[in-house]
Image (tube, rainbow, N blue to C red; front, side):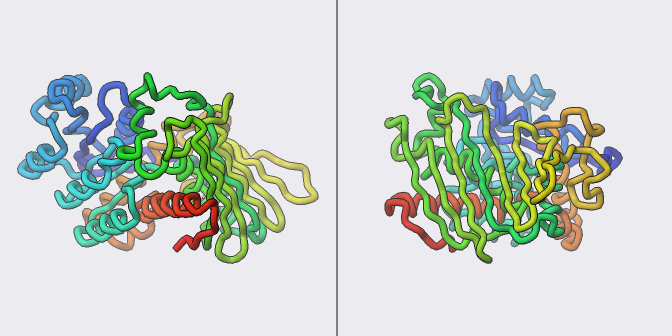
Length: 391
């Protein structure tokens, strides 16, 4: 079971940029970060409007004098306080991630950032260098990887339960944007605007989630890929609302990824199926407490979260917050990741590099590979779905 007794002498003093009133992602960050008492929200630049920012922050219990009109003002003012912030989460539109993350690192803050962390791999590599120079940690919010059954899948692959990995099928294909809803939805409008969203829409917004899940579970590295993408809602061009990728991995395995916002009638359909020479596993985020396990020649079985037959000694498998049979979900997964971020931040603060290296969490390298995937998919699609080298 999850260890709720793990605490610091004082919680990490934490702030947010973005994630103001009405933001689902903002609430998700706050819920996850504060659940275990390892972070305390003490400041924020929640909104571009100073009055809305202050009003919202005070309603959350933040001192109004620590609700700032901009992230720049917050970083500057907090640096002058003995009790200033130590970490910040960035929940703003994509186009701002790089500059805010860079400013936070230069202010000697640890960072949790929404993805994609930057528009280009060069920018992401720069952030990695700055973080290393200052002994700061960057966490990237791939929120689905905190589910215990994702870690069980990872361990099964690692221990050879599936045999040699041959095929990985990934998809994240919802139907909520099958029409031009952005006409009346500002939250969607920026996601389909290149100057704010970046070079992709569904590939960066949801495709990278499925891709990172496959990275976590299999550890496979892409050798080359071919991508075709479409804008079925024509006004979204050049950004895609549907994309298909074929992948060849180093070592001979192959894979596909389908990312879509126009899969009419679908909720999420985020599924990862890993096919080995002996067996296959499949995980679906709408049923996150189960992992389907199919051994050739045997009846299929469904593994359940919280059960003793799972690999209890594996990192993350036993991070159950309630016994098996009860439904754990999205917020628990996020809280598990924030717990790991806190452990990593604390290890860096103590300059315990050995402990830091021993903590698994989606960090800057995960962010870099997500950006690289988007870049390479655009490169391939612009050449008529040509095969391109991944690195």
